Length: 237
Image (cartoon, rainbow, N blue to C red):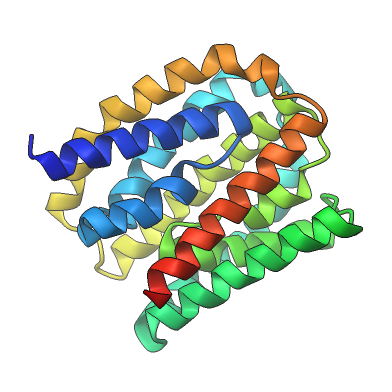
């Protein structure tokens, strides 16, 4: 294993640890850093391992999944995937990614000030569309959905986001495959990164009990803010 893939694996391990504890963060934290290590790793390989992590999260806390919310978010996700593919093909990717990062930072700021986002039906559809466009274009699609569930309990956040990310990641990979963006080397890279993701997820299990109530909410907002900042700085620099 080359040094680059080893570093990428450690990044994935940390991202999987955060997602296993907070409910999301694998793509958010790993995506920007993996793109710096090797652009080939984003978005297809990271989306592939995200599918596995999401399935594990659902299996671990499946009784707490808000399937109604997942369904409405997926209604918006599917057309959002198409928008993401069109954005990659037609728009300057750097400018699009900066817009994504700024949008997330604005949502985080409003949440900290006074705006109380909740998973209503219209909100879920809109967030799902934004998540689809952001996730397919840059592998960072978690914040729109996570911000809606920031006031929910830890098990609900992790299980619901896990179910959503499982369906969303599969839909993004299929969309990219149809668009001819999935190659054989992506499968090999995902296979190399998979053990690191499994290790991070395993370590996250005992950490879940420390993230409850306000701690969980601030963790959700912090992950969103950090990832959005990374995305903006990466594309500016």
